Image (cartoon, rainbow, N blue to C red):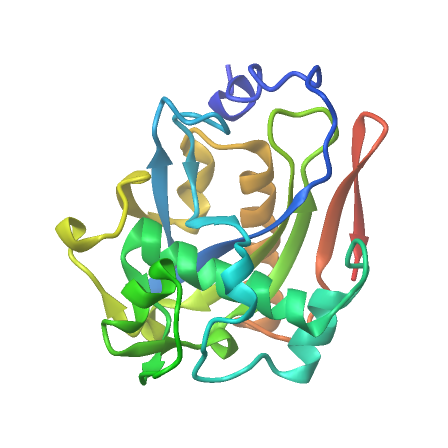
Length: 243
């Protein structure tokens, strides 16, 4: 049986419904011998959401993501794209927080810093302080927003997740495993984008890889101007719309 589908069996829509939390995932692309590879890690078997699955670094937005110091701000076009059909009251502040949440999670889960050299004298939260203490400030201009997906209702966790992609050449610092802030993601591996489907995946992760592959082939790389596919549940089916 398809391991990707088997991994979905435990996710039954029987939980109390809740509003999806803003979140972000970072897909880092490294082209080796002409074939794109992406960085993925395996979740702990004890994790509540998709235990044992291979995923990209990512997680929910924290309040401090909106106010963390940065080396640059989102380009107006990128900010507007993130605000398109944003739940609740759309704001540039939330758009900024979503992009910076992805950068923070890439640091915490994979020990990867996406930023530029810099420091700040302003008070900074503990999570961001660890990032900045390495001598860098986050830089969201390195990210390309390429997909959005909202977890269906009545799941154990719900996220309004934005998928970002970036080139591995834009990594500012890649920490050794023993210096990563957390061990939430184990077995970090570079996987050919065409082989991702052989791993144990959430269904939406496979969809994201198909969308990213189409994006790269159509644009011959990453493009900020390409329409963003938006997946959300309507009844028992996912609907794909373009933002």
